[in-house]
Image 1 (spheres, rainbow, N blue to C red):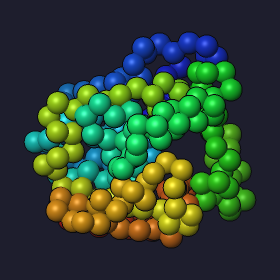
Image 2 (image 1 turned 180 degrees about the vertical axis):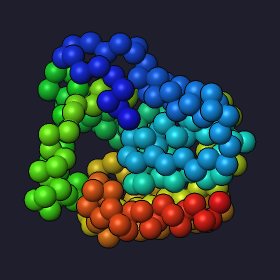
Image 3 (image 1 turned 120 degrees about the horizontal axis):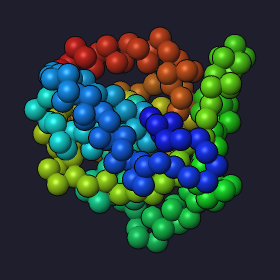
Length: 211
């Protein structure tokens, strides 16, 4: 979703790209008068679907978080991890900034680091990789209506390896408590839709049946 911004080196046409991503998805649902929607977010896109849920709860049947952030009001991607101290949050923001060579764009991760190891998949995906705007990871999300609260949710945790660096196992621990949450696990790396597409599709279809 981050590729909605332009790919120029120094500028991005949206001053608030996270908000732009939320606007784009919410506007699509509203324009097409969709209801009973199952909204899926992977990784950073957990910020986006939570922002959409804050606006359009009545149109949603379920949210599905694939190894994704689950923010609360005012969180950015650095702070959207349960149990972090203020110092740890600032350290994460600094870490994110160091990942951007020019202070604007985040380079795509090495595919092997997110669980993609099949040569044919790597060959197909590599030419399509593009930078992601750093600002989306540092922009807070406003959730005046409780974000994802009140919507049924599924959290799918990647376990091989778990994405500890982004805090996603901590979100899974919250989902494990139940309530509005169902927790599932997938034995692959973070890019589950590339590393294990069949199993990922099965989990998505299961979530659809649970609505």
